[in-house]
Amino acid sequence: MQMQGPAPANLGSDTLDTGSTVAAGSSPRFGRAATTRHLLFLLAVLLTGVSLCLFAYYAVSQRRQALNEAERITANTAEVLAEHAGRVFDASNLLASQAVALAAGKSWDEISQSYTDHQFLLSLSNTLAFVSSLWLTDQAGMPRLTSRAFPAPRIDASDREHFIKHRERDQGPVISTLLRSRVSGRTNIVMSRRVGDEAGNFRGIAQVVIEPTYFFDFYEKLDLGFPVEVNLFRDDLSVIIRYPPLSETEALDLKKWSNLNVLRRNSIKGTHIVASPADGVERIESYRHIKDFPLYVSVGIDRADVLTRWTHQMILEGAFVAIALAALLTLLGFAYQRTLVDQRISHFLDQRVRQRTAQLERALKEKDLLLKEVDHRVKNSLQFVSNLLDLQARLTAHSEIREELVEANRRVLAIAQVHRRLYQDTAIDTVDFGRYLRDLCRDLEQNLSPSPSVKLVVDADSAELPIGTVTSLGLIVNELVANAFKHAYPQPGTEDRIEVGFRRTGAASYEIAVRDYGVGLSGEFGADGSGLGAMLVRMLAQQINGRLDIARGSTGTSFRLEFDAAA
Image 1 (tube, rainbow, N blue to C red):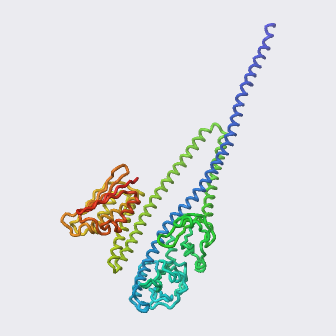
Image 2: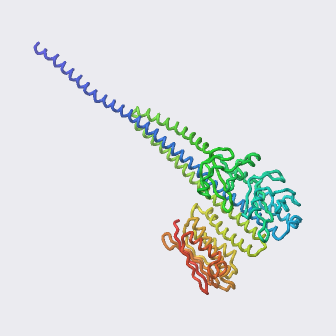
Image 3: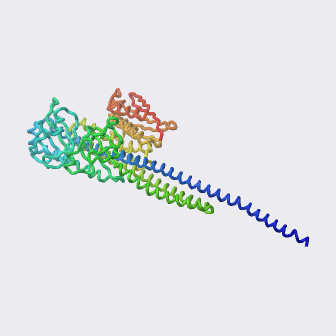
């Protein structure tokens, strides 16, 4: 019995020890779990705060990007519309000049009684779709001849603003605001020129009546992704036309821009936020000056519309971010799903990167196509200008003027060749100058060679050059080769030739050489190099920072142009 006494004591001691071991083992395990929960809570708070900050930063950057994109759209569109309006008024100015020439040396009675002159004005008016009619008005403001009817209607135009301006002084072409015709009752735009006598005294005006609907039809085809406002206005800030079109009463009552102080800082182009005089809506407005005319064109996008679209986009993306964040916070409570969450997030981000990459690639392709289309349209526009010059040359009776117009046409075609090459090549901002030079010289030889015995030899390396450099070089070669064809060999021999060479002389250095073996400098280059051709070549060489060397001799002339260009 004595031996059985300690047994309960030992058994109880073992039980207590075991219990102590379990209790001691439970404390670190539950402590680690609490620490993990605290860490997850802190991580969730940190993740939420960082996500909100990042989304706020993203929203602000997207807002800035949306406004910048709207500015870019308005600036590019204003550039295109300024070119379009410039062509319209250039062509109208040409018609007005021809009408002025028609009145020269004739009395108003002779003009008003000449049905032949009426038919001539009618034919001029029909050459351009946007011209409604042509008018010749005497110094008293009475129409004497018009393409609209014969004889001319008896109306008084002496109170018209453009008539008064011409009567006060000769100031070139004057463009009116929107006017109501006193013959047809319709609204139109008048571009006019002063008619003077031999002493320069005021005899009257020549007027070209332009249809505003031509501009409206053109602007209606714009598809910029936003509703746009287009304004054509003068340098005195008087609005001529506004698109979308207003009613006739509203259009005739359009006020001047009152807050375009930005024009005082930059009279060529600019972008600003301004309220339109037509409806008072605040827009992101870009304006461009129309070359050679006291006119501007502006393109505006409603700023509120841009911000509304941005707000809708942020609401959608914010909802998406909120859902993703809620899902992530929920998943953080399940430690065993951490790897799966990482995998899902990684997969999701990869998907977003691929989608964004695909979108950027599509946008880049669309940009390339747009640039190709712009080059195509520029080429067509230059061809249109060439046709106008050719038409004017055919209609001009003076041989010197006709020769000048032919020379101008040749220069326009040299520039058009650049855009034709841009449209055909895969590059969007460079041209293979070697190919362009060979094409240009082939055209010059076909059109200007005085004799089959005068040969044009071209030796040109291939080199990708920027479009601006190619345009200047093309005009330089055009002038040099044309002058050599016209004047180097007044009596063509059996083996007369003109040599054109282009080669690379360094990493970004090039040399162009034009040489003939004729009688020396003549023609537009003159014996002293003071002709128009020489001036144009020197000006273009300076424009590309080139170094021009001319070697004159009795047995020919050599031009060498060295320049640097980074493709």
